[in-house]
Image (cartoon, rainbow, N blue to C red; front, side, top):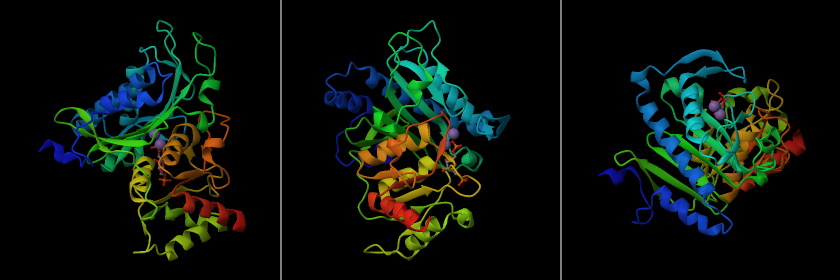
Length: 342
Ligand code: AHG
Ligand code: MN
Ligand code: MN
């Protein structure tokens, strides 16, 4: 039964296209462009899913031999996802400019196409280190309205807006099933791809992060590199018992997968700054910000350990940040431990 792939809360069959269209109702000023932009990203998600399904055959696993602006090995799937998202979006007239983890500079819209009013920042493939082990990976995106004048090429300033200016954010998780989760500020909604009909169907309507935390998620391999506050906070979590059971630990090493589980099961994901990464590892503009926007729209919170992620004014496209994200109380507790113990 194809619909076994998802457990919709109601028996209504709602496609992502239908849902996005209905969301437009909340934005009277909407001209449908944002709606179409979200469709395009859902299309890109379907395309990457099918490319991944063929990965083993098409030999696109493994490394390209290139090193990206982050100084990291570029995986072939990184490039494929990056190219897919670019090609789906460069000619639509909806975007003024794009920026991607895989490109050092902003990505201009080709002159032959008229620039639109939105800005798209994305991590085309998050969790690259997991690709060859068939663990979950994903795509993360943030959408802003341009701040530079209409009908001119988009600028770096368009891409360096604080997260609270975001108009939409989402991610796609390529796991056992492909899921598309997005928010336009009116709740967080999850769709599961039914590959037999090529449709994303509503499976998680209005996701709210559970009040009861289930997991904490951090790479404890770096424990000795953390500040005393982070070490003590982690020990606090290890001693913590929520009403029914102790809080357990899960860490996949793909931010988008670790975040998705945190959002659905409740808890906290954190990637602290440490002695070898004083600024943290995760990137502010296309990893921390979009997920922070989603977390807050699901009743959660996200901080860099000192301040709200969405209030940080980006200085550069690939700037890194520490990230604490999930249940508001746990993130605030992390801030308290860091404030008290450093
Ligand atoms: P990306 O694959 O886009 O470079 O992101 C990888 C990130 C993130 O997905 C994950 O949370 C983190 O790297 C894992 O880092 P560690 O291996 O240091 O834990
Ligand atoms: Mn990433
Ligand atoms: Mn990536």
